[in-house]
Length: 597
Image (tube, rainbow, N blue to C red):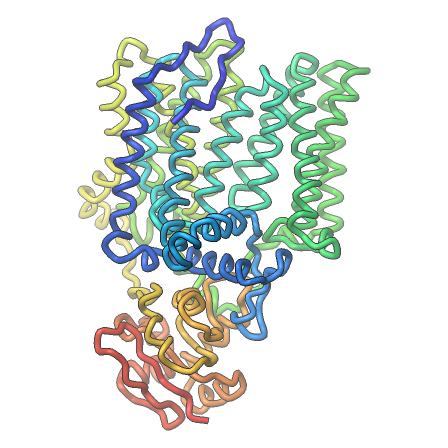
């Protein structure tokens, strides 16, 4: 595993990294990768897929089977189909790997190997990037190893690198780490500055989950130029050029020409392109103006004016994008699905439900933020921008995690090199390998998770956490396997089971865990809440062939809300005359009813 950083031009030279840290980091990678793959070894890698992983596999299979590059419709989801908000950036390498391995292993074997290899590859890249970022911040070789130790103990992020993780979160974490690494070296290299612009736009092309962190890096670059001016003008211009040019190239490669300006607020489209291309060109224009009026006041004025113009254009053309991404959803979908999505839980909701998890998800990033700010104040002037980039990114991710827990994954990975390097810099006399490793393990999310579990009785007294009904647990591909024995049909099934049915059968489904699928999710939830006469009408109107429930874990939220509804009736063994229960293997977790026509 090679170090991705280059020798700094600062007065303090970064020494050459020998074989020792590379060997240790490689061993840590192997051990962590095996641990992350163990659940898949036990259950089978296809059953290790999350709902998003299963949908990604469906999308990749469609591409291999000839579906158009620009055609992102899932025709079997809420028929006659729903347009997905994912891009082909992740589909392409996954499809390439499967096709490369297919002649040797067959289609099933090629998919299985890809499901193991892809997340392991991205995990290796993440660890290499983390070690490189640590090396940029300190000359202490032990800090690189400590940073990698923290990364392999970064509990909130590890789920995105387990075997089967092919959705897109791991790739976005890697691109963010790469962006932090090259942007931290912006003052020394215009080439790396341009690469930063490329990583910025490529992350946006995959998805918008990292937008706050990306924006924070952009603001840091903007602030650097406003403060320093000419000494960094060429590099800042290169960053802006890389951002604008790569966005201009990626747009027609991923979006049909007719849709380039469409008001797509949840994916790479017109609004994002306006901000990315406009932001990159604004940086270039600021650099050009500074050549003729090189003053701090002019940089402030030109930057503010260009920002006002860009934001004004965005609000004028795409004002709808400032609304909540869930504003269009039916309230019943928000209540019974969105509010129970784990990665969308806010900090306040976590305190209400799982206060014991707060230390693991928030403790380490916040502790690192304090440490990094202290390191910033004590670092040499020429090294401060490196810390500013890391701190700005981490602050944005912590802010995101307060709104939705998903931000904690990126925060824990970005925090790893900052924490290790901060310790080595602030207390060099204590920065031996043993001390750094011990302190890193003690501060890691895994250790803080143990603290939270130990303190759970006290936390329960303080916060009095709410108890919630267990969510349906039927979501794996094996749970849907019995449907393959039935004739193809249109299936009303639980939201989280939808992607597995798409991946395992040729059936059409209505419900799946995606915010664009408001119609299909609403139809399923209304069906399961409905009294029997209304349920019959819904099934007839939607031409449904099968109704599926999770017999192993019925949806208690639905049953509690509608004790006379269809879900409750079926759970009590009351089969209405318009449904016929189909015999399945007793070991199956699902129950299937055929709709009598």
